[in-house]
Image (cartoon, rainbow, N blue to C red; front, side, top):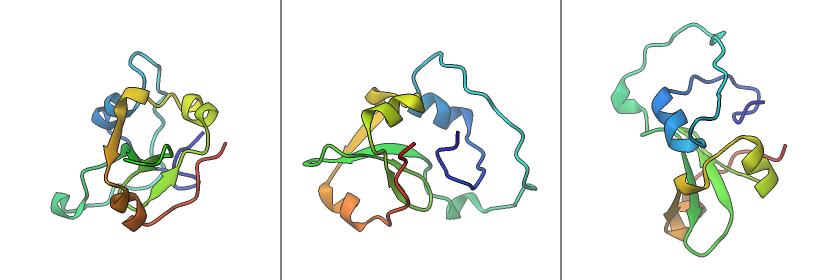
Length: 104
């Protein structure tokens, strides 16, 4: 299972703790890509779960786009934490680039 689709990503322990239900075992796998040197000032603050003020849709957001989590079953399948959803102004959802939905 990958919430990122086909692109492997490294998720920090901090992000795991912020997004997922506490005490759920998250299997870490070795990153098959070589490390890349990136200036931390060029990287947004990281992954989050967000929703608009007037829309019940929940999105997974990372450094590139937001991806709608298509159902409660999919949300639970990935062990996301309902208490970690951040409500943002609707305009934020409208303006962020959309990625493919997380639907399975």
